[in-house]
Every structure is written in C-alpha cells, then in structure tokens.
Length: 511
Picture (tube, rainbow, N blue to C red):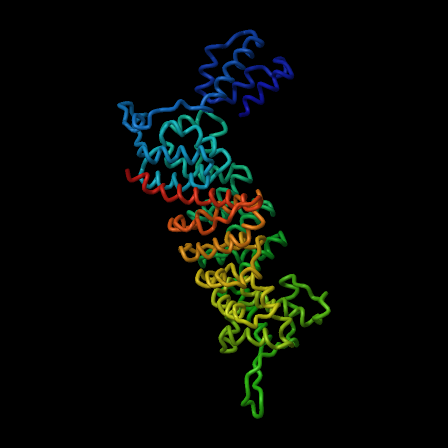
C-alpha cells in the first residue's frame, strides 16, 4: 500500500519535507473524509493521528470476522446487502480451498459460482481479494461474483483497484506481468478478444512483449488471424519475424508454406528397382536441389559441423525437418509406415531419421506419431529410433500414448526429466485408462528417487486432468515406505486430495 510507504518516508525525513497532506492526497475519498475530522494545524500532531488511523486502516480486512454462513445467505432488507450467497456446502468448501492453499481449484469454484449467479459470502471476500492482487485470471472471475460489497471493499484499497478496471483498462495501463496474465487468460476464454487487444497495441509494444504475446498466441485459427500473422514477417525484430515464419510454416494455406513446399518438392523422389523398373520402390534423397534461398530466408545453417553430413546434405536435413510429413504422403503416394521404414532400415538413409522426428513434432502430426510408435514397439527397434521418440509424443493421440505407457519400452524412452513436461503439454481429456497408464509410468519413474520440491507444482496441475474414477485406484500407486519413497507418497496424497476436492465442487452448489 503506497500510503504506508509515504508514512515511513515522513518518519525518516520529517514532516517538513513530507507533510501529512502529501500522504492523504492519494487515499480513497471515503478515507480522506474520515481523516478530515482529525485535522490539526500542527503537522507533528497530524502525522501521529494519521499514523494511528492508517495502522487501523491497513489492518482492516486482513482478518474478517467469522460470520454464520446460514445467516449470511438470508437476504437483508438493505439493498446493498441483498446478495444471493452460495449454499452452505459450497461456502465451506471454499473455506477449505483457501485454508489448504488449493489455489488452482479456486478458479473452478468461482466459475461454478458465476454459473449459478451467486455472490461470494462476506467472510471470504478479503482473502479472495488479497489473492487476486497478483493473479489476473482470478481477478477476472472475482469481478463476476464479488457483488456490491466486493466492489465497495475493493474501492478502499489501492492494491485492489485493478478489480474495478475493465479489460481494456488493464491492457492499456497494467504492468507487463498483469498484461501477460490477462492475455493468457483471454486466450483460453475469449481468443477473439485477446487477438483484438494484441492488434490494437501491436505497433506500440516493445520487441520483447511482441515476442512473448506471439509465442502465447501461437497458431492462427482463422483467415483473419492468418493475414495478421503474415504482416509480422516484416517485423523490425528478427526474433519476432523468425517466430512468425515458424508459425506460418505450420499453416498449409499460408503463402510462405506453399512457396516453400513447391520449391523443395524434389528433395524426396521414388526410384523403381530391379530390371525394367519392376522391382521394389526405393526412396532417394536428392541433395542437388538448390536450397540457398530458403537457408538464408529461414536463417538455417549453410555449413555442416557434423562430419557425417556434407554442407548440402545438412541443408537438406534442416529443410526436411520443417516440411509437414503429409506432403510426402501425397507426393509419393505412400503411407507413413512405408516412408519411414527405409529411414529405419537403410543404412544410407538412417542419418536422416531424426529429421522425421523433428517434423512430426513441429507439425504435431498424430498419424505419423502412430506410425513411428509402431516401429518403436516392435521387437527390432533401433537405438536411433528410441533416442528420437520422446520428441514425437506431444502430438500423439491418447490411445497411442496409453499403448506406449503400458509397454516395458516406455522406461527406456521417458525418464523423470521428460515425463512431466510431456504430460503438461497434452490438451486432450484424460480417460481413466489413460490416467492409470500415466500414473503407472510416474510411479516407475518417481517412487524410487522421490519427488523434488520444484516438481510439486507440475504434479498438482495433473490433478486438473484426471477423472474422479482414479480415486478408487490410488492404492495401486503407493509403494512400501522408505526415505525416498516418502516424498512420492506425500505428493501422491496431495494429488489425490486435490482431485477429491475438485470432484466435490459441482455438487456443493446443488444443495
């Protein structure tokens, strides 16, 4: 609170340099009116009165008197108190979420509260307003359910003024952190609004903010967004222009992608084997294609630092990693399996295998991930194939991942260092079958070595994905006790407690 800082400044410098009036000028009008009744011609006396008053003001709302929830739910004849509070069960659950620091579930609770047209009960307002100071997503939900009392309370605290601002005002006057949080929230709940705001100030943003906003915005989802993205190719920042290039290369309909594919279409060719071309078909890589324009345009490496590749081969390697594999399906009229197989079995082509993993990951191609894993789960999977498998998984279908997680070879592909980042990237609904497979993989990776402190937040995010039915399976993932396994057991109890509370939220509002 700025006023407290000014009082401390006056105490250090004296009232001659920092008179009490300079402190009170920035306080809410209602507070200034109260202070006016205590005014004194003597600055020292005024300063002591102001300090005593501000101490009480600062503490106000830090602890709220405990109210009877049932009484709070009864409407008062006073219009300002005429609020529709949630049922007792929902209020008690909110208290548990706050007391147990289950902040990730507060948004879920507030969403249900808004859907039922309830307002937050008074005893929880100060805590929620305090939590909302640094969390724009929480602020956006609070505004919908804080009621008249919440707006009145927010008006008395400078730190809560953002709750009274519109989305546009936050975007135009907020801190860099607040604007970033707001943008990420709108991308999840109102992408068109997020795009509108980004476009409205794009030319005024600094290069770092343009890059961060574009990274979060990611792939365009309409023709209008595609046109907007294409304008960024001319951005003054090389990092922003390079990111725009990458995003456009993922869009088959973009002009950049069509030109790129057309000029690189001869990199892979088919050669008929045997006499008179009647034998098996062989895929060949044509390293004679002139790629100089694209190497320069896409800021790729013109020279090879790998002894296994000539300069032209390495240029080909880089370009192939950016082309959507479905392009080769259409051009060669071959299935993903038939295209991948020679790169796995033919020694002359094996050094190009990693480029397919990069392309599958870059374009999040689930069909090609399935084809890749068919070779991985076969008995004769090669070392190079296994080494590059982790990178193709983020775009896989849930059935594909379930199949891998339940396979003994998963432990050679996914370690404690990359399993959580992978699960964090998945955007599909988790079935019970998939959740069990994921938990078994986590068990194998973490039960022995334990869970580190910095990993706990990521683990808690998994609770948002898992279905209620997993609660009945939790005993399967509890190992015998030992020192390292105790941290796994602790995080597991916390994870299932979060899932349990999450499942109670909807029914608590149906009382």
